[in-house]
Image: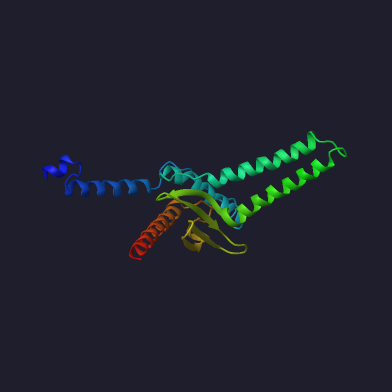
Length: 210
């Protein structure tokens, strides 16, 4: 109606077109970037090489797919490591033994304390993630896990309150020459994102029902 248009509400058709355009933009952002370099594992028998190729792919592809990186925990780790280096440098180049032995002891305690905090962050927060991105405004870790003596690779999206994962053989992502199949990894990642978003919506609906 004229009143609705004057209030800036728009017509139902305009709302439908707007939602369609938003979905279309989301689909474009999820498309695989065409300009990515080929990723190759030096050896298909080396777990480190496989995880390195997967990590390089996600770090190159996700920002170009429109995902915003979240550097919060990375920055926390950097600050903690800088504090550790500060303790070490101060004890090494400023303090003198045995005159300042108490201060040297305090620096040693501080160094191991902050190193322990970094270790706890790696163990309980970062875990096996290759990066952290925003999905619907929520910080989500992208975990790539491959156990020792196993050919299975697990991809996981891990948020604060929920997570989704997909596990398959490394042969589904790499060819016989060690080259990473970007299309297969991208397809698996997109499915995980859709599942993660779906679980988020279902969780929100359950909270509203309560």
